[in-house]
Length: 192
Ligand code: HEC
Image 1 (spheres, rainbow, N blue to C red):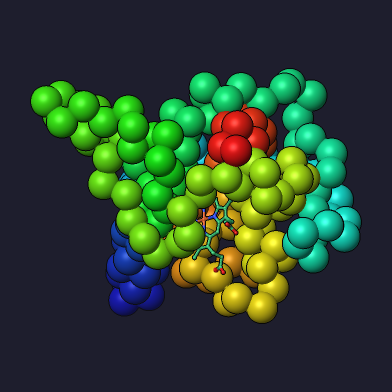
Image 2 (cartoon, helix red, strand yellow):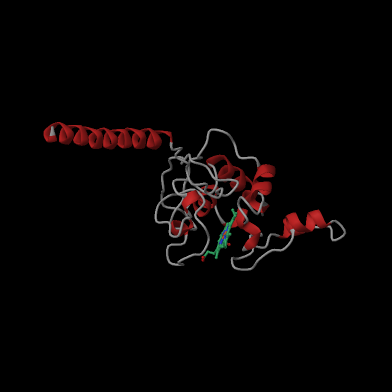
């Protein structure tokens, strides 16, 4: 009799444990795995990195002679990408006289878009005459290669090499797409 009771008790405990395990497994399966929401990377960012070849430049130690894309750069789009605070944000560090000239003090929107030029970098007036197209492309893609001795603060807009302090949202991305780089190069070429 004692033996039978022991068997029954053991079975009940075993069954209960079994049920708990099965229930837990079900609960785990149903648990929705939510990916953490990351803040968006910059508006011009791209997951596609174009291939490019760095060669020796004329005015600078490095140049990228071949276009990053098949499509020709559009200077007008380049201007817009350059001034856009979420894309190139070039005005944060550079003065550009032809852009400043677009500011109409009575129109707040033009002040916001084309005004407020910083001075961390040199003014970009005349860069189209100082550098070749390939050198301008090199400066945008990876300025550390264009100015190897300067320890420059200018951001690298189209490389994943040697970057520091990249936010999690922007890792494995480049700051500007290959086409935006070509558009901005076309815009800079016009600054003579
Ligand atoms: C955080 C500041 C910063 C930002 C943003 C920045 N630059 Fe620069 N840029 C510099 C600095 C500083 C230099 C000078 C290079 C050096 O460090 O010696 C420079 C140099 C240049 C030069 C060479 C100028 C010359 O006369 O030698 C060009 C062209 C240029 N930048 C274009 C751009 C464009 C176009 C953008 C936007 C897509 C941009 N930069 C964004 C800081 C910046």
